[in-house]
Length: 257
Image (cartoon, rainbow, N blue to C red; front, side):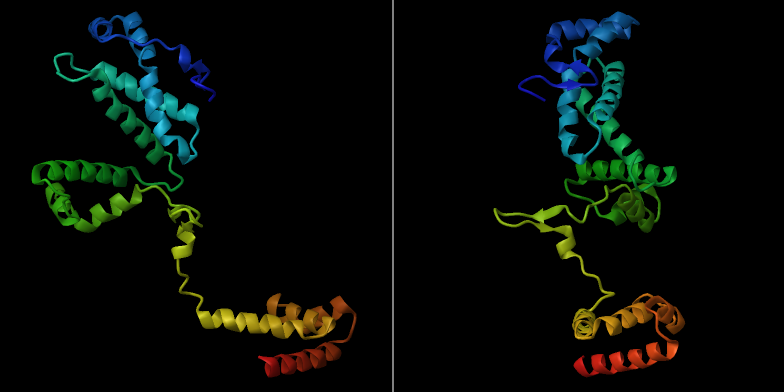
């Protein structure tokens, strides 16, 4: 992207035409009447609209050419279904169609595969939530959404969670001019306690106080799971010597820890 020039899918969007409102209405009438040339001109004249929507998804790491092509499908659906009798601008009608098509593509191509039935439940839940929000003037609870859909509440919760985008551990959750706080900074691993970290640090320090051969024996025996015979063959001494050195090393480490 340089200056006002944006090339996507091999198209220099700075050269795209801008249609007047009257000309657009004329093309819509002809396109709905089966005029394919008018439909192509209409699509070409609204590609800037697709580009403006696609740029909202720029930082998601998706291929922009792919998103642009998917957005064009949404544009075509919008153009084909637009009602000329409606007192709304074409862009107002088409933008949600383009966004919806792109979001559907992102959900269907998510790294986490979600079954079709669960996606359908999630989409129904989103529609029910929007309808309830409009009617009640507030955000509905999952229990209210479930009642409106006549499905168990846990199915609604599971479906809505399934279509959420994965979150990277390196996504920032807060930044105020200084160092950012990332998701990984807020995650606790309950499998490892503070005592475990202290114990591991003590073991590492105790190992470092051993002679090189003793340290090698302990690492091979207790970190690599090797037998005394295997260790003996590795360092070229007898198994009895390995056993004596191992016991002496463990005693020294026990005293230190």
